[in-house]
Length: 208
Image 1 (cartoon, rainbow, N blue to C red):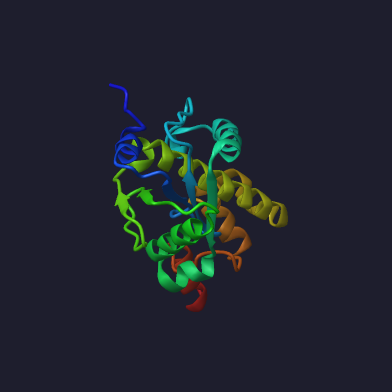
Image 2 (cartoon, helix red, strand yellow):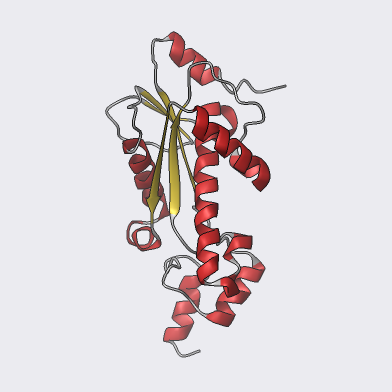
C-alpha cells in the first residue's frame, strides 16, 4: 500500500493553514561534527517524485532532490549546532536547538509545523510525527536538506583531515572510523561525551 505523503499537509490546508513547515535533523549518531537541522515550506499541494526519508535514498538521489527542493520551496532554513554545544547540553537538546534555529531562519514564517517526532515550543501549533520523514513529504524534504548539508560539511572537514576518511563514513561510528581515531587521535571536533570517544579519553587519562 502506497503511503500518501501529503496526507497531513492536505488536512492542514483544508483547515485553512497556508505555510506548513516540515522540520528534521541529521547527525544525531556520528562521533564528530555538528548536528544539522532543516525547516522547509513547500508550495501547497506540491508533489516531488521520488521523495522519501533521506536515509532510504542514495547520496546521488539526495543531491538531485536537494537541488529541486532548494529551487521550488517557498522557504528553507538551516540550523547547525556544533560538537561543543552537543557535549554541553546533550544530543537531544542540541537537535531541538538546531530545529529551532532552522525554523527561525525561514524567511517566510510558518503557521503550522510538522516535525519528525520532536516536541518544540513555538508560537504556532507543532505536530510531532513518529517516522515523520517517511510519512510527510514536507518532513522528508527537510530531512534531505539536513542530511545533504551535513554530508557536505563532513566532506569539507575531510579535506582538512584526509587520514580520518570523514568523506566516507561521515563521522558515524563504523569499525574503520574507530580504528582511524585510535590510530590518529581525537580531534577537537569530536563529541567527547559519546562512546567510544569518552572511553578512549578515560584510557588516555588513566595512562593506558
